Amino acid sequence: MRVAVMPSAPAFQRSHRALPPSMDISQGTIGVGIIGAGRIGIVHLEALALCPTVKPVIISNPTVSKAKAAAEMYPGMAWTDTDTDVINHPDVDAVWICSPSQFHAAQITACAHAGKHVFCEKPIATNLEETFKAVNLCREKGVKLMTALQRRFDPNFARVRQSIQNGDIGEPILVKLCSRDPAPPPLKYVKGGGGIFKDMAIHDLDMSRFLMGSEPVAIMASGSCTVSPEIAELDGPEKYDTASIMVKFANGREALIDVCRQAPYGYDQRAEVLGTKGMMQTDNMHPSTARIFSDKFVGSADMPYDFFMSRYKEAYKQETMAFVDSLVNDTPAPCSGRDGLVALIMAIAAGISAEERRWVQFDEVLVAEGIINKPALAPERPMSAEAWVKAALRGIERDPNSETDLREVFILFDLDSDGEVTAPEVSEALTLLGLSRTPEQVKEMVAKVDGNKDGKIDVEEFLKLWKSTGSLVDSQRDSAFKNVFAFFDPVARN
Image 1: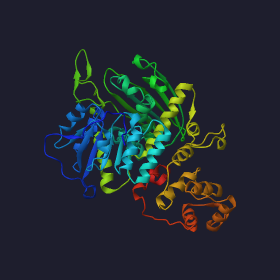
Image 2: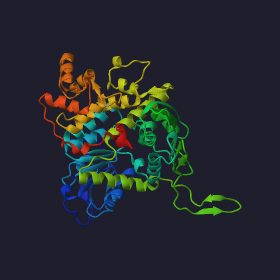
Image 3: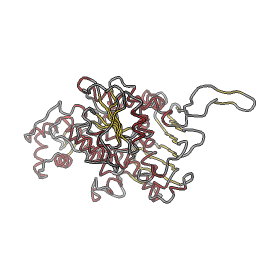
Image 4: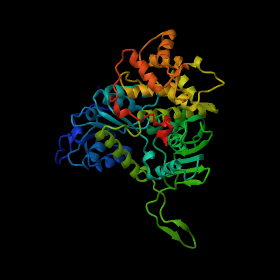
């Protein structure tokens, strides 16, 4: 199966050096293949080379000279111009997808069918349908899928998050994020990539949720073309090179984000959080801490880093090590496909807002994409923040024999987060799990396990109800997915 639109090629080649040893994930050694030898592919390759439990095996790129140049830096690494050579290589346990956005979903699909774990640059796909298919297929095939949201691993942003969780600045009041690239990307990168909200601002949208510690409710965005006239005729958000975004959260607070594809003074990545007890901010990173003091200038001797590879070098290293650790120790992926899914919904909503010049509720995206039914919504009463996120995540398939998945299903239908579900909610949950019962039958089932006879059951009673249908429940099954819903658990969240 060919995945991306790439020319046919002869069998992959190896650099003229010693061959790598045989890979064995069970022994703590991960064989990795990389799709894409562009800037981000090289960044990940360098990070992987620093991991003692990783062996870079093969790298691909349509322009094979780039793949060859990258491979020749590492002993025994193979190169090719075809992504399928990477995915189907017998020594590859996991694939790092660093190709253009429009190829991600197809390449994830191929990896899942080949039984290869996946680390995918954002976004997982450029639309929700492909995103759900990719996430579900990975779960079905038992492969881990990590979304590359590297800013969560950046020491600066991580330190802000830590201070918020420690209460150092009190409860967040306002989050401000700034993301500006030194120079705009070429037209071929922008075209087909989904636009500035999906290929750039998605990091900031995810970070706003990460720092605020609350789920988003609505978004307002605007965009313009000010520095890249060559993209002005593209469709939708792809024609924007500059954008401003405001996000409302369930806790009543807001986040302000500005992004631009050009900042001549360097890579501008800053965050600021105003809290009830104080304020915390991050500054741009420079090659050195040296400062100049003269009669003409006082300030940093060096300009900020002018490339994301330099600015986020440590973040890429840390996220790479985190995913490798999850593979070796069979623990949850640090940034799951679900995190990427929520960030993508936020980005899609931002695009709608910019085009229609209005506030957009996130449940509107779910209705438009057919994730939830429009008749179930009252237009004047949008879904709550946690409710729309849970509704979105219902699209991910569950294993009806996994206690972990059953507990997740319970959480997804507990829309008011009171720890209990009603008979109608149980009926929907059973349908999601593939079991059809009439409303009367569900009421009887609930009544049999309802300890306090109030018409609602908690998660343990829900598990008891499910077992009463004759279904087997394995408490150890899919252990790698445990705690992925910690965001909805106040105890786990703190």
